[in-house]
Length: 121
Image 1: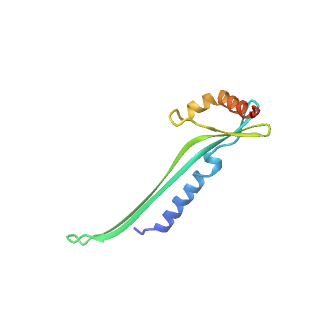
Image 2 (image 1 turned 45 degrees about the vertical axis):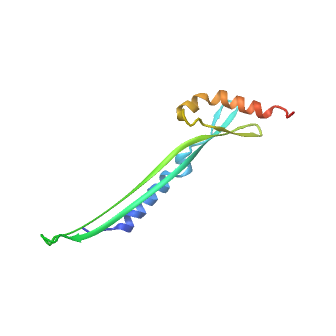
């Protein structure tokens, strides 16, 4: 069995680039009534690999092996929201997850935008 370690590393790297690009991870801008929303996320990546070969002293058999792995962690952190020429960032709740954030978006966006549009004292 011939080891193609460099080829394996290239394949894993290409896979990670494909899966962690902005179109795949962040998603497309969407409209919510008069608001335009763009999801914002945090991405973390990890990668590890190893390989080796050896000879069994009793059987004189030879062996070799290798392995590699990669992981991608994705966490939603909020939304960039526009209404007219105003832009706001609405943070997603840490303890409620993305589903809860989506349920609260319409009311939350309205409150944030209204608050920012109030005249300063």
